Image (cartoon, rainbow, N blue to C red; front, side, top):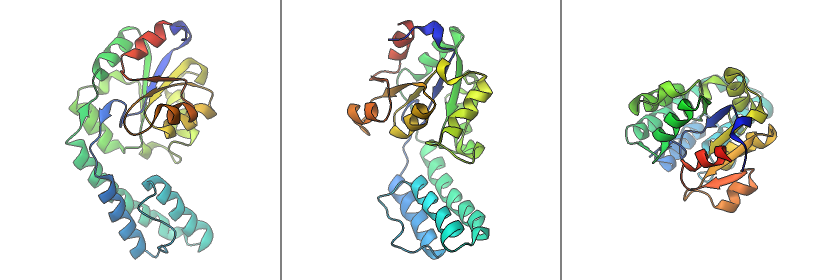
Length: 226
């Protein structure tokens, strides 16, 4: 355990950590891939088994380094983002809060912890979800994928949250549910708490850099109490 007085801020992921995000990921991926094939991406470079963020990186590399036509990239990225946003908004209408999420945020705010959010959802979708559940006011920093050139797992995403909260990485706990949440945490030597779900095993989360694995969000309060 840790001593809560050594921690000034808690930084949360959104999807799978605070909310159940019901997105048809496979259909979104298929539509993105279809659009990219029509844009000239060779079919052997990308597949439905890859995460959309990984596909985007492959596409960026192809246009900037392989065929050296970076001018096409911004247009393609806009089309891809429009597709992703369509599916994200559809999923946002069906979201539910994860049990304990609002109670935890209320407790942390009452205890005067700073609270941050770093998410791969875009600003429009994130704002809709936070307002839907009346939890936006709890956050002192909200950084979406629109706000950074290098979203997580790149550490720049988390660094911007830290800058906005005016805290150092040794004074925070990052809470997430996915190994990509902890890749940047590990690079910044911050403490990480993983919420266990059916997406990843306990070992996967620990191996990715999580210091603690919990099954209930409110267990974070016990961790802080030491």
